[in-house]
Image 1 (cartoon, helix red, strand yellow):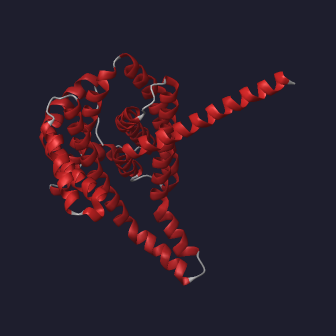
Image 2: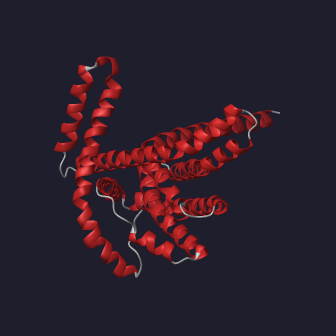
Length: 324
């Protein structure tokens, strides 16, 4: 009997440890997901363009294929690679984050430049000129998965830098949870956004009440504004997150700590001036200045990326340079 009681005690102890581990993983995954929010917003804002121009019945299958590719990027390629790097060469994590942050600044600045000086996308126009929907779909899915790899690398690296536990399996499970949940959230939201106008059309044509039909028409009319707002939020998030990552990296590596420390000091002074909303004011001021820095850095990187890195990449790969 005493042996059975001892066994039950052991089982209870193991269950407590397992429950604590689940709580720790959930907490770490939530914290990591919040840190990567800016990149997630950008991912959700970027993806709908990959189904633009296709028949309505191909939109969800395309999104599903991109989502599956995104999970493979995160779980099969990035997760083991980042864990190995973190174990054998942890000093490389911050420089990698900074490179990813600089890329986000470049993408955000390029979108601002495109807004101020509209110009056609030659690659997109060339793709649609082929007239082969199946070939175009393959190209779009492949391009989306390549772009997702860059954004996923940034998300997973941010998540890894957020996980405080030194335990390897804890880090791995947390990264896997973050990767799967973020992918589901992003592409679930993308699917809903892409099909929202179809839902509106269906309601406008088939609902019995005038209010429901009017709501459906409102959805159809409002979706362009929603997409424009989402794109603007995604661009702002890229500049804020990218600038913040680069500035924090400069401070952590002691290469140039002055900007980060100065911005933090300015944010603290602004927060003290409005004690009723100190937390929000400090975040808003710091995020705003980080975003301005990100825009400036991205503007400097545009000619480097388009005239040096892009052509070099094309020569090395024999294809198109990676871009949104």
